[in-house]
Image 1 (tube, rainbow, N blue to C red):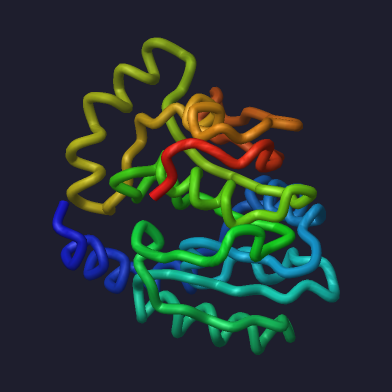
Image 2 (cartoon, helix red, strand yellow):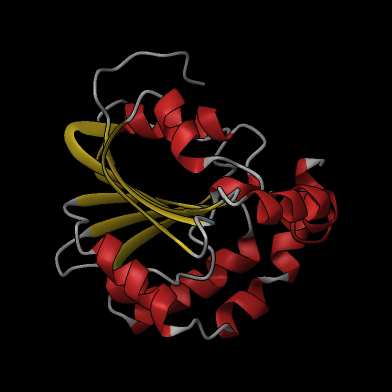
Length: 207
């Protein structure tokens, strides 16, 4: 999909994301994952700031998203939760930072929208300090054959409507990008993956 059209899809969804009331299980996953964030944090595709209530005290967050409407909601959420945050309106696939810029890199429910998710993961690896953490909560393809067949059948329609792929193998993408998985948990028939990773040795193709 052409990038500007994708941005427009997420701009249109900004109010919906802002008003969305997530169930207690999703909030629990966010809290469980983000309790390990520390220091200088980069959050990619921040959306409306759903993670902001769950960051530990003392972190400094750099929050990036390509949707101006989403960033407007996230800025308000940061004020509400008194989070030390700065914001960047940027396409994650074109964004770049110096190597080893962050203690923690966070992505939640965003790998579905990238044209090149492996490249984004390779960037995360490069931007994270060697002793830092990469924290992911992503959705993707189920390991249950019947359900995965349904996901594959519906994926083209869902992508056109919401800008979101439903058929990506998250843990496989993480490994292909050269990240070291420290811990992983799967939920909702393996459609949701929580991954705690670290950069490992720098290398790979990157972008």
